[in-house]
Amino acid sequence: MIDLSVVVSVYNEEESLPSFYAVLSDELAKLPVTAEIIFVNDGSRDGSLSILKSFLEQDARVIIVDFSKNFGHEAAMIAGIDKSRGESVVCMDADLQHPPHYIAEMLCKRSEGFDIVNMVRNSRADAGFLKRWTSSFFYWMTNRIIHEKLEPNASDFFMISKRIAAVLKTDYRERTRFLRGFIQIMGFKKTQIQFDAPKRIAGESKYSLFKLIVLSFSAVSALSKAPLKIALWSSALFGLFSLIVIVYSLIMWIVDTPVSGYTTIVILISAMFSVNLLVIGIIGEYIGFLFDEVKKRPIYTVMEEYE
Ligand code: UDP
Ligand code: MG
Image 1 (spheres, rainbow, N blue to C red):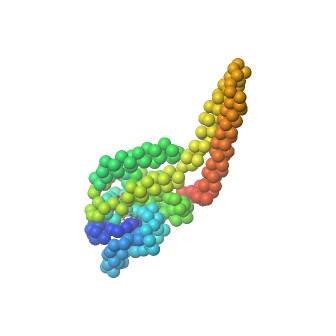
Image 2: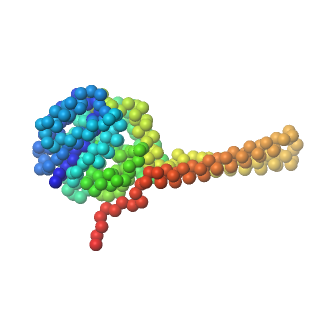
Image 3: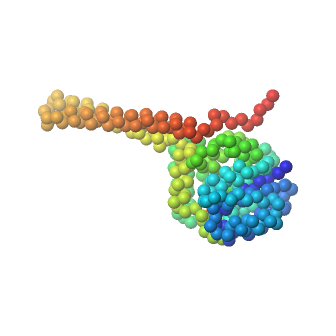
């Protein structure tokens, strides 16, 4: 039986891996748990894989999942969770920005009965003004659009129980994912721990601005259908507006003699635009339903059964 699975996503981390592994091993040695360490190599093009193999040779707890190419951090975390066998599963970065000494505290929370322990960033020594600002803007926007509220400073550093891992192994298998969002909307007993994210120990952030923008779109589309409703709402607004225009043109047609054909054109254009938007809105609603069906989200998730 394995108590703890540590899932680590690795993308071009040759500089940070040795210290990460040393710190993690030290921390695990202090804990009374049996562990496995699952490194998911997300298509690194540097020496990361051979470093991981050297860990494998000296440590029976190490497992390496080597991707055929770079599939992204989210995919790497999912692959690690799929592979995990532990009673608790912790996901963390390989750059020591998710300090392993918090694992003890997270395990405490788990033993108190929490299924999900989210690590929430107090401060980010790494992030410059731009990253911090875009991150808060992202959470602000997303929380405005989606129904379930997300914790603003949630990170990809979290611990989940075996049963949450089991849910993630079968459900929430969409191509477009936002794992830390899913973890917050699944229900179950959850709690959070504040932490200070230190600077990355070596190398550079593997998240380019482009990857962050893609992630934001994934998050919104994975968690919300609101953008699809734009057509419906604008058809309602424009419909009201065109009604006013139509009534006004008809009155002008009666009391005044406008240019020939003017009233007909105004009425036709207003009416047609409203109908157009309405039809697009209805199609949007159906696409929304298709979207839900395609995602195959669970209709319900059982936490426990009592007989
Ligand atoms: N990572 C990954 N695939 C990617 C990008 C990043 O597996 O395409 C890993 C990376 O090796 C690190 C973690 O995800 O362990 C977080 O990435 P990074 O530290 O670059 O992001 P930041 O902390 O700057 O947001
Ligand atoms: Mg980092």
